[in-house]
Length: 150
Image (cartoon, rainbow, N blue to C red):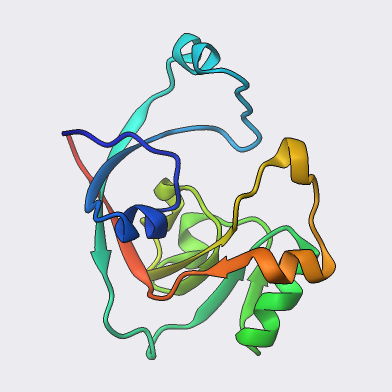
């Protein structure tokens, strides 16, 4: 069985997935139908998901462009550096809290995914306030994503 997914690695890990393929998509890429994805024929990369037992010795970095999400995460991780755009070098060896594509997550020392329950951009748009706070999900455990070279 092969898993091809755009889900956050934390969600895949909860489903028992330890190895998967992810589409390599430039930031801002939007597809409206499966046919559009097939026509675009994006590259895929293979990853493994590993658990991380201890992150206490890693610097924490919050990665998000959404002001409401940043505010909620800063309450939980006071003093963490906030980045709205990242390079692999900026997050290398750090505990990243936020939402990133797998090719960037692979640079982090550990990663804690932040997702929004049942989010659909066409329906939800830009959430804020209590609705954002109620639907924001911070993964229970950090993980590491490692690219598997072909």
